[in-house]
Each structure stands twice: as C-alpha cells, then as structure tokens.
Length: 226
Ligand code: CDP
Ligand code: CDP
Image (cartoon, rainbow, N blue to C red; front, side, top):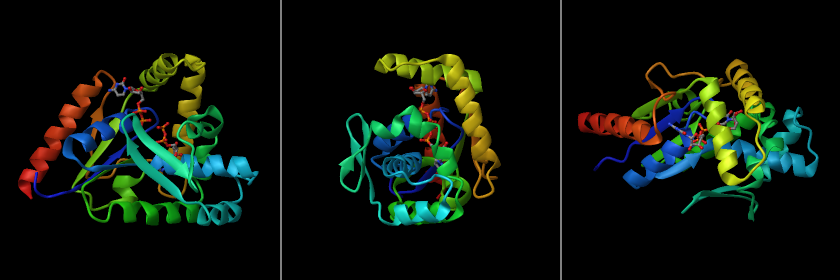
C-alpha cells in the first residue's frame, strides 16, 4: 500500500486489541504503539517510588522525569522506563489493578497524548488504547472499536495466564475486568468510548485470525478510497 495511514484500535480490557494490532502492524510494516503500556509503565514507576496514585501533581512530576520507551521485538514489545526493561513487571496484578486510577488524571493524560501523537506523526502507525479514535488520533483514517462479552474476555485472560504458567482465577478476572471497564468508561477525561466514526467489531465468537482478516479488509477498502 502506498499511503501510510493511521489506524486506531480501541476497546475494553482483554478484547484482543494488542494481539490484533501487533499482527496488523507487522502485516503492513507499520509501527505498533501500545498506549496501555505507557500508563502501566507510569503506574509501575509510581509504585516503585512510593508515589501516591491519587496525587495528580506528584504523578505528573514523576511522568516528566520518566522516559518510556516501546521497542518492537519478536515476542511483542519491549517496554523500558529510564533505560530499565519492565516488559513483564508492568503486566503484574498489582499494576493491572491500579493503572485505571493513574489514567484518570487530566494532566497525566495530556502529557501521554503529546507523546503518543509524536510517535504517530509520520503515519504508518497502528495504535491501541481507550481514547485513540476519540482524542489521540481523531483524524485516523481507520478507527476500530473491539468488543467482547466480559465472560469471554475473562476466559481469554485466564487461558493466557495458564498458558504462561501464571496463577489465575477466572472469577477474579471477571471482577477485575468489569471494575476496570467501569472506571475507564466513567472517568471524566477521555473515557473509554467508541468514536462516532469507528467501526465496531464484536469479537466474542471470532478467532484472532478472523478479527485480523476483517480489519485488514476494512483498511484495504479505506486506502483504496484515498
Ligand atoms: O491490555 P489491557 O486491556 O489489560 O489494558 P491496557 O491496554 O494495557 O491498558 C491498561 C489501562 O490503561 C486501561 O485499563 C486504562 O485505564 C489505561 N489506558 C487509558 O486510559 N488510555 C489508553 N489509551 C490506554 C490505556
Ligand atoms: O489488548 P487487549 O487487552 O484488548 O487484549 P489482548 O491482550 O490482545 O488479548 C487478550 C487475550 O485474548 C490474548 O491471550 C489473546 O490471544 C486472546 N484473544 C483471543 O483468544 N481471541 C481473539 N479474537 C482475540 C484475542
């Protein structure tokens, strides 16, 4: 494809955003930006340094002295903060259950959006998150909103943990996912919401390949119209 466009993929927790975004980016030779990893990295750093997650001022100060680097790798993406790799650490239950508190703060989000827009400035990007189509890349040529039932999403996270040999409890995943969805959708600043011009895909009964195929065909059709 000649024109290198921007592709926004949003949706609730464990809907399959990062899995399909990564495959699509690879397929198109685009860069992939996991914005959730950026909020996770800040949360991790705050927990390490004992910064209160409710303090917007302290978090913004911390963010301003924190360089977050996302590097593609064979197994996904390597995440570093100030040069230290934290790829696995940012997926811990401790981070997962606190990240939505950090992501509520307006000034923190504003700084994250500046960084995310910079990463996308040359196009050729697949970015996933909660507010990409609505706030970060409002002019993205393709916007996708991925959905799946809470039960299906909890089941996917559970299977993923079992696969990786991590402790896992299906019922706990349901509770944690529903709680995070609620905070993310009800927050005042840039809540999780489908952009008016996003295409919604319910992935509950779809395989990863099925979702990728649908999105690639939407992208090819859109690029053909440019
Ligand atoms: O992969 P998973 O769905 O578990 O979450 P994630 O994409 O890593 O995002 C973690 C959290 O970061 C979300 O629950 C949101 O609270 C926050 N987030 C956000 O507010 N805005 C984004 N663009 C991306 C993530
Ligand atoms: O990024 P997000 O939190 O939206 O989800 P993910 O981490 O990409 O996907 C969560 C899990 O669901 C992964 O283990 C995927 O392999 C799995 N998945 C699936 O089973 N079927 C799909 N259609 C999409 C993802």
